[in-house]
Length: 318
Image 1 (cartoon, rainbow, N blue to C red):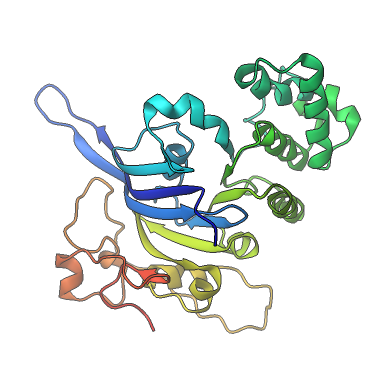
Image 2 (image 1 turned 90 degrees about the vertical axis):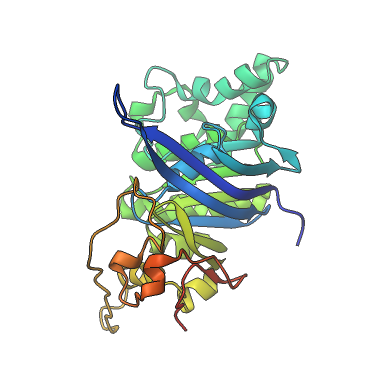
């Protein structure tokens, strides 16, 4: 396997919330020491419940927010704030909402050419237009769409425009933040197949953020399962789906709808209170909801062990 395009080491993001004249602010640990490698032509999926830190991780990878601690490298170059203007063109993002991510007052052609106007001012207007028209065809849209406005398109077509815009600068890494969750189910598969085809053509590295494990199963190669800001299980897709090692992962998989109505249902219903993200618990953050919890789980935070299929659990599942 070739060298990783991007490497994250102990990546963390904390926020100070609350506080006032007579009280100190509390620390919200949105992401806590996440490690991963992104490879060209492969997809790493980050899954978990809402509020687990998926989107915060995406904002750090796309250089929207600076990590509180940890290291991020892109093609061997440290991703530090002074280098952001140079490196941002290599990492682009496709947002969740295709209705809110496009400027309704601009024509599609202008939307697609804008990244080149800002980042490649040396390119002529004729070359920018040619590049934008070529990109429209690459994502499955027609030439006449170039002069139309976003409100004239369906949700699936708008997301294709957003993907085309993200590819205008020839990025190496594409962050996909819930790219199909706002679309009808009938449209989702077409957009996912487009993303797979583009990855094969352009040798892109994908960081795929999602809460839908049925979608993740279709597109990803490797998985990070997050819970309250930390990675609780990582590994190849086949191993994680076939034999989850962390109880939280097993509970997520049990809640995934199945296409076979006759298949046996073994739904795991989690009980207990979800800990506050402001609480810096000494033990495992999943302990209050885990059916395998023991005293050591409440006292000692487990390490992520067992690579390549690792789980942060004192009593991993077989």
